[in-house]
Length: 220
Image (cartoon, rainbow, N blue to C red):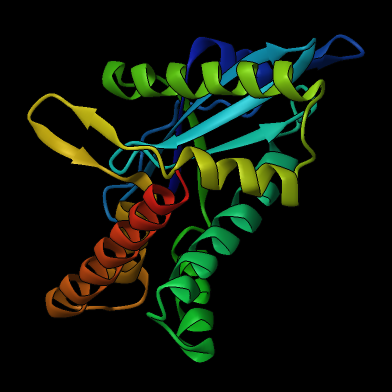
Protein backbone atom coordinates (compact mmCIF):
# COMPACT_ATOMS: atom_id res chain seq x y z
CA UNK A 1 0.00 0.00 0.00
CA UNK A 2 1.19 3.49 -0.85
CA UNK A 3 0.74 5.75 2.18
CA UNK A 4 1.09 9.52 2.06
CA UNK A 5 1.45 11.14 5.47
CA UNK A 6 0.17 14.65 4.83
CA UNK A 7 1.09 17.87 6.57
CA UNK A 8 -1.64 20.36 7.40
CA UNK A 9 -0.89 22.26 4.19
CA UNK A 10 -0.96 19.07 2.12
CA UNK A 11 -4.31 18.13 3.64
CA UNK A 12 -5.67 21.51 2.59
CA UNK A 13 -4.23 21.08 -0.92
CA UNK A 14 -6.02 17.74 -1.28
CA UNK A 15 -9.37 19.15 -0.16
CA UNK A 16 -11.71 21.15 -2.36
CA UNK A 17 -15.22 22.59 -2.18
CA UNK A 18 -17.47 22.62 -5.22
CA UNK A 19 -21.06 23.86 -5.18
CA UNK A 20 -21.03 23.81 -1.40
CA UNK A 21 -19.81 20.20 -1.20
CA UNK A 22 -16.41 19.55 0.39
CA UNK A 23 -14.41 16.64 -0.97
CA UNK A 24 -11.10 15.43 0.43
CA UNK A 25 -8.58 12.70 -0.31
CA UNK A 26 -7.63 12.59 3.37
CA UNK A 27 -9.03 9.60 5.24
CA UNK A 28 -8.78 8.27 8.78
CA UNK A 29 -9.92 4.67 8.45
CA UNK A 30 -7.69 2.01 10.09
CA UNK A 31 -4.78 0.79 7.99
CA UNK A 32 -4.88 -2.89 7.01
CA UNK A 33 -2.50 -4.94 9.14
CA UNK A 34 -1.67 -7.36 6.31
CA UNK A 35 -0.53 -4.73 3.78
CA UNK A 36 2.82 -3.10 4.66
CA UNK A 37 2.88 0.60 3.88
CA UNK A 38 5.34 2.35 1.57
CA UNK A 39 5.46 5.60 3.53
CA UNK A 40 5.94 9.01 1.95
CA UNK A 41 5.48 12.42 3.53
CA UNK A 42 3.60 15.02 1.50
CA UNK A 43 3.86 18.78 1.91
CA UNK A 44 2.29 21.65 -0.02
CA UNK A 45 3.49 25.21 -0.58
CA UNK A 46 2.84 28.13 -2.92
CA UNK A 47 5.76 29.23 -5.11
CA UNK A 48 5.31 32.18 -7.44
CA UNK A 49 1.60 31.94 -6.56
CA UNK A 50 1.40 28.40 -7.93
CA UNK A 51 0.65 25.25 -5.89
CA UNK A 52 3.60 22.91 -5.43
CA UNK A 53 3.48 19.47 -3.80
CA UNK A 54 6.63 17.83 -2.45
CA UNK A 55 6.70 14.10 -1.65
CA UNK A 56 9.57 12.55 0.31
CA UNK A 57 10.13 8.87 1.07
CA UNK A 58 10.32 8.57 4.84
CA UNK A 59 13.27 6.16 4.92
CA UNK A 60 15.54 7.11 2.01
CA UNK A 61 14.49 10.81 1.88
CA UNK A 62 14.17 10.48 -1.89
CA UNK A 63 11.99 13.39 -3.02
CA UNK A 64 9.86 14.36 -5.99
CA UNK A 65 8.29 17.75 -6.68
CA UNK A 66 4.96 18.15 -8.48
CA UNK A 67 4.36 21.57 -9.92
CA UNK A 68 1.00 23.24 -10.42
CA UNK A 69 -1.26 20.35 -9.37
CA UNK A 70 -4.75 21.76 -8.89
CA UNK A 71 -6.35 21.88 -5.47
CA UNK A 72 -8.10 18.61 -4.62
CA UNK A 73 -6.65 16.77 -7.64
CA UNK A 74 -5.28 13.67 -5.94
CA UNK A 75 -5.80 11.61 -9.08
CA UNK A 76 -3.29 13.66 -11.08
CA UNK A 77 -0.85 13.55 -8.18
CA UNK A 78 -0.96 9.74 -8.04
CA UNK A 79 -0.55 9.47 -11.80
CA UNK A 80 2.47 11.80 -11.78
CA UNK A 81 3.93 10.03 -8.76
CA UNK A 82 4.06 6.60 -10.38
CA UNK A 83 5.15 7.96 -13.75
CA UNK A 84 8.04 9.90 -12.21
CA UNK A 85 9.00 7.15 -9.78
CA UNK A 86 9.21 4.45 -12.44
CA UNK A 87 11.23 6.69 -14.74
CA UNK A 88 13.69 7.64 -12.01
CA UNK A 89 14.34 4.07 -10.93
CA UNK A 90 14.67 2.89 -14.53
CA UNK A 91 17.17 5.64 -15.34
CA UNK A 92 19.27 4.86 -12.27
CA UNK A 93 19.25 1.11 -12.88
CA UNK A 94 20.24 1.63 -16.52
CA UNK A 95 22.96 4.15 -15.65
CA UNK A 96 24.65 1.60 -13.40
CA UNK A 97 23.88 -1.36 -15.72
CA UNK A 98 22.13 -3.22 -12.90
CA UNK A 99 19.05 -4.55 -14.75
CA UNK A 100 18.27 -5.45 -18.34
CA UNK A 101 15.01 -4.52 -20.08
CA UNK A 102 13.11 -7.55 -18.80
CA UNK A 103 14.37 -6.95 -15.26
CA UNK A 104 13.28 -3.32 -15.38
CA UNK A 105 9.81 -4.29 -16.59
CA UNK A 106 9.43 -6.92 -13.88
CA UNK A 107 10.48 -4.43 -11.20
CA UNK A 108 8.06 -1.79 -12.51
CA UNK A 109 5.19 -4.28 -12.66
CA UNK A 110 5.88 -5.42 -9.11
CA UNK A 111 6.10 -1.86 -7.78
CA UNK A 112 2.73 -0.99 -9.30
CA UNK A 113 1.11 -4.26 -8.26
CA UNK A 114 1.91 -3.97 -4.56
CA UNK A 115 0.81 -0.33 -4.43
CA UNK A 116 -2.56 -0.55 -6.12
CA UNK A 117 -4.08 0.76 -2.91
CA UNK A 118 -3.16 4.36 -2.09
CA UNK A 119 -4.23 6.34 0.96
CA UNK A 120 -3.66 9.85 2.28
CA UNK A 121 -3.63 10.48 6.02
CA UNK A 122 -2.91 13.49 8.21
CA UNK A 123 0.41 13.30 10.04
CA UNK A 124 4.13 13.34 9.53
CA UNK A 125 7.60 13.02 10.97
CA UNK A 126 9.68 16.00 12.16
CA UNK A 127 12.97 14.67 10.83
CA UNK A 128 11.48 14.07 7.39
CA UNK A 129 9.87 17.52 7.47
CA UNK A 130 13.27 19.12 8.11
CA UNK A 131 14.55 17.63 4.86
CA UNK A 132 11.30 18.53 3.10
CA UNK A 133 11.81 22.15 4.11
CA UNK A 134 15.29 22.06 2.57
CA UNK A 135 13.80 20.80 -0.69
CA UNK A 136 11.22 23.60 -0.64
CA UNK A 137 14.04 26.12 -0.27
CA UNK A 138 15.80 24.62 -3.30
CA UNK A 139 12.51 24.87 -5.21
CA UNK A 140 12.07 28.54 -4.38
CA UNK A 141 15.67 29.30 -5.38
CA UNK A 142 15.29 27.41 -8.67
CA UNK A 143 12.10 29.25 -9.60
CA UNK A 144 13.68 32.60 -8.71
CA UNK A 145 16.76 31.81 -10.82
CA UNK A 146 14.82 30.47 -13.83
CA UNK A 147 11.93 32.90 -13.76
CA UNK A 148 9.21 30.24 -13.78
CA UNK A 149 8.09 26.79 -12.75
CA UNK A 150 9.29 23.67 -14.59
CA UNK A 151 6.82 21.40 -16.32
CA UNK A 152 5.79 18.09 -14.77
CA UNK A 153 7.78 16.09 -17.32
CA UNK A 154 11.44 16.28 -18.35
CA UNK A 155 12.22 19.55 -16.56
CA UNK A 156 10.70 18.35 -13.30
CA UNK A 157 12.40 14.96 -13.58
CA UNK A 158 15.75 16.65 -14.13
CA UNK A 159 15.20 18.83 -11.07
CA UNK A 160 14.31 15.75 -9.00
CA UNK A 161 17.50 14.03 -10.16
CA UNK A 162 19.48 17.07 -9.00
CA UNK A 163 17.76 17.09 -5.60
CA UNK A 164 18.39 13.41 -4.92
CA UNK A 165 22.10 13.56 -5.67
CA UNK A 166 22.61 15.82 -2.65
CA UNK A 167 23.72 13.94 0.50
CA UNK A 168 21.36 13.79 3.47
CA UNK A 169 22.10 13.37 7.14
CA UNK A 170 20.10 12.48 10.23
CA UNK A 171 20.90 11.87 13.86
CA UNK A 172 22.34 8.40 14.38
CA UNK A 173 22.91 7.76 10.66
CA UNK A 174 25.93 8.38 8.44
CA UNK A 175 25.33 10.63 5.45
CA UNK A 176 23.70 8.98 2.46
CA UNK A 177 22.56 9.78 -1.08
CA UNK A 178 18.78 9.50 -1.56
CA UNK A 179 18.99 8.27 -5.16
CA UNK A 180 21.39 5.47 -4.19
CA UNK A 181 19.23 4.38 -1.27
CA UNK A 182 15.99 4.49 -3.25
CA UNK A 183 17.47 2.41 -6.05
CA UNK A 184 18.76 -0.19 -3.59
CA UNK A 185 15.40 -0.29 -1.82
CA UNK A 186 13.58 -0.86 -5.12
CA UNK A 187 16.07 -3.52 -6.22
CA UNK A 188 15.54 -5.33 -2.92
CA UNK A 189 11.79 -4.94 -2.55
CA UNK A 190 10.58 -5.06 -6.16
CA UNK A 191 13.31 -6.84 -8.14
CA UNK A 192 14.27 -9.55 -5.63
CA UNK A 193 17.95 -8.58 -5.54
CA UNK A 194 19.78 -10.28 -2.64
CA UNK A 195 22.39 -8.77 -0.30
CA UNK A 196 25.28 -9.77 -2.56
CA UNK A 197 23.57 -8.04 -5.47
CA UNK A 198 22.97 -4.92 -3.39
CA UNK A 199 26.64 -4.80 -2.37
CA UNK A 200 27.55 -5.02 -6.05
CA UNK A 201 25.12 -2.20 -6.84
CA UNK A 202 26.52 0.02 -4.10
CA UNK A 203 30.06 -0.56 -5.34
CA UNK A 204 29.04 0.51 -8.84
CA UNK A 205 27.41 3.65 -7.44
CA UNK A 206 30.46 4.48 -5.33
CA UNK A 207 32.78 4.04 -8.29
CA UNK A 208 30.59 6.27 -10.45
CA UNK A 209 30.57 9.03 -7.82
CA UNK A 210 34.36 8.94 -7.47
CA UNK A 211 34.66 9.15 -11.24
CA UNK A 212 32.34 12.16 -11.36
CA UNK A 213 34.33 13.90 -8.62
CA UNK A 214 37.60 13.28 -10.46
CA UNK A 215 36.14 14.73 -13.65
CA UNK A 216 34.97 17.84 -11.80
CA UNK A 217 38.40 18.31 -10.23
CA UNK A 218 40.08 17.99 -13.62
CA UNK A 219 37.77 20.65 -15.06
CA UNK A 220 38.44 23.12 -12.23
